Image (cartoon, rainbow, N blue to C red; front, top):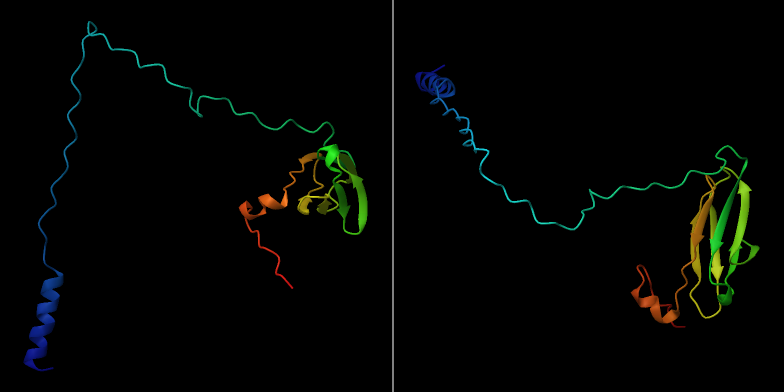
Amino acid sequence: MNKAARLLALALVASCHKQSAPKPVAQAPAPPPKVSAAVAVPAPAAAAPSVADEELVGEAPESDPTSETVTIKLVADPNRKARVFWGRKDLGLAPLEVTRPRGSGPLDLVVVTPGFLTLHTRVFTDRDDKLALRLYAPSEAPSLLGYRAEPSP
């Protein structure tokens, strides 16, 4: 190894072993001054109750969580004549109740109502449930997420 290479290696080693100046140590903040008992502290103004102040309410437990069947209630305005289909099977007009074996898989339902958009929804058979069917008029369609106008022929 030549002399220039040795000097370069020595310079690199020396720069790696340089000692840096010690970092200043942060001092703890001074404790707040003590307040005598004679000083009155004004009470905070009455504020509206926050979400943290409200008590959370859970769902009511099922009447019989070990039953072999579940009941799914589909609720809609009876005057709208909303017909509910499960595949090709016509389940009837809403409001109605569907009874299925517990854990038999999801039901993909189609709700057809004259003068309203067709509604596609899914209900699960792991517990009793109630589903309110919200029907939309064609004039409300552009405001719905994922709506696309049908292509003209």
